[in-house]
Every structure is written in structure tokens, then in C-alpha cells.
Length: 113
Image 1 (cartoon, rainbow, N blue to C red):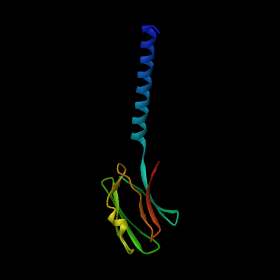
Image 2: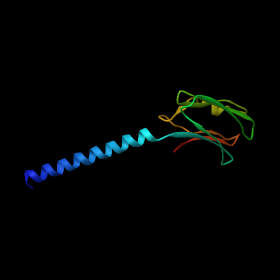
Image 3: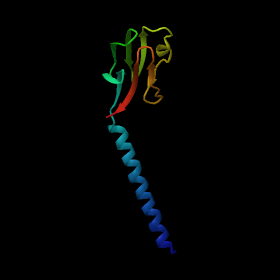
Image 4: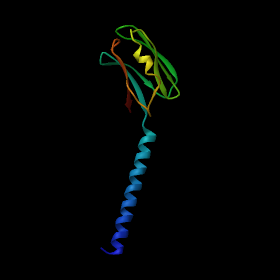
């Protein structure tokens, strides 16, 4: 292989890498992420993870409260025996973990638009 061919291959690789990085940055900037609350496998509520607000809904065992603040969300109140949902604490897109309340049959997950 000649030096010209090696330079051409390296140039093509750098261009491909630049395109790949650009596409990844563009995709991350334009993805809107929403939280979804499901009850008995049916979506009962969709929320913007970047809008501060409190949401109230009913589960099989009782009432629940979802707090969204500063791009994070958590269950703050729930009527169930062990209160495992609220002990999970704050969840965000970066350190995502679905919130599952088995007695209430409620799941809080993420969805990319």
C-alpha cells in the first residue's frame, strides 16, 4: 500500500467518525423523554420529565402521588403495606430505574419520543 492510499483511508475514517459523532449529538439534543404511568398494563398518565408538577392517581391498593422536579421524579405518597415505591427515591434519565408498585399494580417508566 502506498502512502497516498493510507492517507486516503485515514481521511475517510476521520470523515466517517465526524459524521457519526454529529448524528449522535443531534439525536441526543432532539429526543424528548416522557414518563409513563401504567396501571394494570394500561397507560393512565404521561408526563414531561422536565416539567415540575405533582400528579395523583389511584392504584389497586389506594392513592399515589408522583412528584416531578428538576428533571427527576419519585413516588412520595402511596397507600400500600411496605412503601417500597417511595423508598426508591429520586429517579432521572441519567440514572434511570423503573418504579414498580406491585400492590397497586402501577409502573412508572420512560419513553423516548
